[in-house]
Length: 360
Image 1: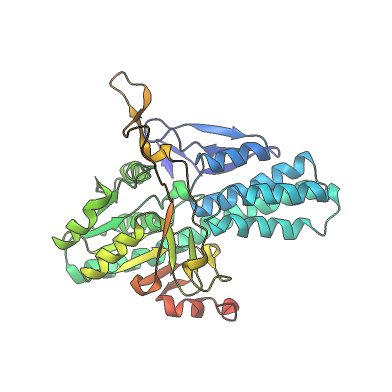
Image 2: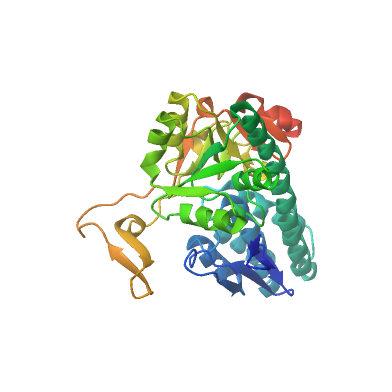
């Protein structure tokens, strides 16, 4: 994606011993990049959500393992680094998928060959992510084009969280389709959920503004009201994990959007690259749900009148806070899963990936 006149990926190698990232904790107030120089630094970036989004977390984990091999390519250090990185955030399956892939390449190699091999494999995973997301966008854009032909007016899309280029290496998943449809001349408007408590919706709004896509930021609880008024045509989200039967784990609040969409007769789609599909899980009931720090809920952060970033507490200090980061939308509420191979109803997902049919 272009920021001003410069094209950025959300993560990139710097030589053979460091990684650049877009620091998402500063957005949308300022655009900043930072250099990650070690495996521990990458774990911190993942945990603090300087990098976030399932596909991007996977690539970050792969580079984190490569950085660990640069420092110590022994079997023991490989095992420790793998475990520590995989525990950084538990819900997004792409992290484990990418670590497993790099680990499989490194395990049979002598220690001296591991640093270079890990670096190359991480770069391959990053490049593949770009192509997967480009293809997802093609299929999602066709859905929006067909919808426009049906309604013969501007298509109204509602999205939740951020599934744009910031959540991937480039293009995004759900937003990739919106970008490609917009670029093809499909008139559309995006309702952007703020997505409390981390407010990733403002990242989506920032992306859409940079791309020139008409959009409106709304509070999370407004979606059902807009659907009742006929102001939404489709719900399009990303996902952090999809089970073999098509249950969708995504940012907390997604389930409520799917329920509202079903009640109002609207389609609900999740756009995901194949590494986000966990073929080892039959259903979403076994997806680990990350519980994040309560101060994400009890405090708000923003720009003050003096121009400085500040956090303020909005609840009494004695109030107990729960902060589950994700929820599960059951397959029965999902119209279709948009992948790099096409769009399928949950029951037909395995048909797009026959190599996984036995696992499903």
